[in-house]
Image (tube, rainbow, N blue to C red; front, side):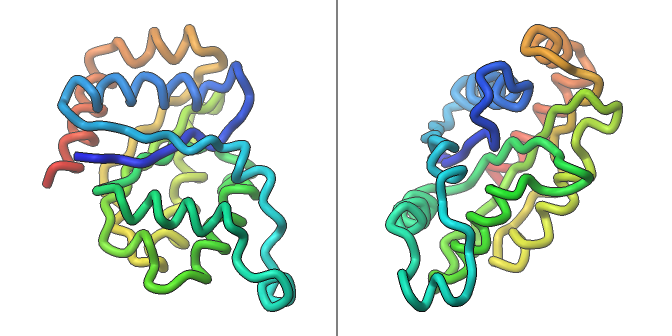
Length: 178
């Protein structure tokens, strides 16, 4: 299966980037390929407004992201939680993607994951992310991956090695092939 995905962070020490890297390895071990979006592109997008779209049109970067999504069989999004919700740049990119018809995400399976220093592991942010993705016709998979209480890549790597989390990751990744 060809997947397209990203970690919604450009911080080099991001726990979500560490989780993305781990999941990339798990997916490769199962025969999936993963093309990664450079999230800096998302962070640099202009803020979506109706007026901006009418004056400037949809940014070329969003058109390319839509093409990349269309070429993929599914998506992997690893996102931090900001104030119990989705990071602003990611929500902005989704708003821009909603302006292209047909929706590039329509019918695509989407695996969500998050890592956080919070004991809840970013769960609330993923819950908020499900709504706009579902509105764009994405099939957001029911099993997501949340990793709480981690503050460094080393802690992520230690946590993903535990039997319980290995099993959860296995169940979540298995959904992609169904």
